Length: 626
Image 1 (cartoon, rainbow, N blue to C red):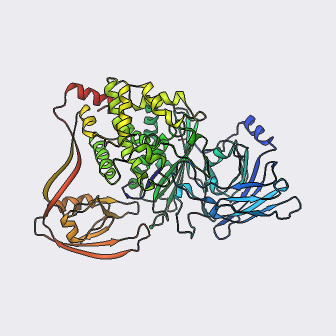
Image 2: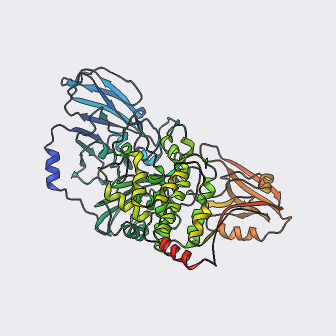
């Protein structure tokens, strides 16, 4: 999952045809009598709610628990989807209601379970819910926009009976005329305005989100893998063709990165863009990974402004086809939706995935060395906000509770662990073996249906590589020692300086400009300097004008250049908007001050060593092809 809450950083070609279903699979699905048979009618929306009906499989117990997930894979947060269910009834053959109790927020314990012939309930839209506590991260939630857009994250609509998650599911969706259901699920029967999805079990159902809207779809062929790009853009600013054109090269490079072939036959990028300038209620944008798809909720912008965001987020999510989707522990492979157990290997699931998303771009020429260096430095600076002595494996195990606030470090230090591990492997193998090859070897040993023991993965990695790698994990992943970044960067001819202090004129007071996905220019940084404190800047302030000059995403680099030319003693008058995000009300303000020198501390400075040896340059070539 990619999720940006603490940082508001600037974020395929076949004609669409109705998919033909594999006949043998379809017949097999139709012939299954003991299946969950769900139906939902998208044309009947009332107060952002939909009614779901279930004809259940055979139940052989006197009582049974019908459950919705407390949590789903990839989110690393408990959301309790049962709280969005109302008007629940269980009926016998005569239409009489059977009694039930609710032992917890997500469960319905039904008496006389053998008599159940029908279950019916209403589902509330999580995106527009008034339940303010714990807003569901939108790529994991449900959207019900009548006659416009429906996001079916299936765990929000369809439940399971306790102990019966491996039974087959049939889900019939009736949709408004002219709409199309985009999904990575490939066993679908489409007849008129009714689609029926056949999946083998509940895990596969949860693994296959569906978005209904008027179709804007493009198909790509990436090394034999059929890739669907589906976009909902309310203002029609961004098309699926534009996204496909933006992603084509990076997907081809990812195919090469993974050894020339992809481990899936089909894949879907499902992208919802909001035109709401206030963004999403969760305060976040991003995506959630699945085995054959990824679901995106991003803010709608002009195509040129959103292109890099889509590339970065999509590159991360697409790499999840490797891990945890094809390399995972039993905790992930046999996921418990209501009493989830965490794995200790978030350094790999999210960290190594985030590293690979950038590494592939620099290695295949889509990112310059200097830009890659900037990414690494930025991650080091953001990682400073987290506990650097907390063992990463412990943080992973306890990321739902005790160390919930440390989870964001998986995208920072987790990626840096990946970088250092990659360099160390390249160093020990004289350039011939890195994390690319390691993940390929692990994929061969494990797979989507073969999990590893959580406490044996690192031992297996050491067996595949070198004893020194065991020491690396012992110190920096399982241990509490901070990573000596300079040691690893030096191996590839890069200089590293932990910090540097100097007196400078800095009109932004220690902050820098960022563009958010609402078309605003904000200031952002770890902390202000003394001048920044004097003038009154706060993180995420929207800069509207400086000394009467309007600041926009289009001219912010020009304005920044002009600011750098200002002399000491210059009067500053800065109009800002404070708030408007994370539930904080908007407030217009004017900040005033006189420009003066202040102490500037720059941390994690990485530069190219112009005197690097041939050995260092050769290893860098093996590492990033630069």
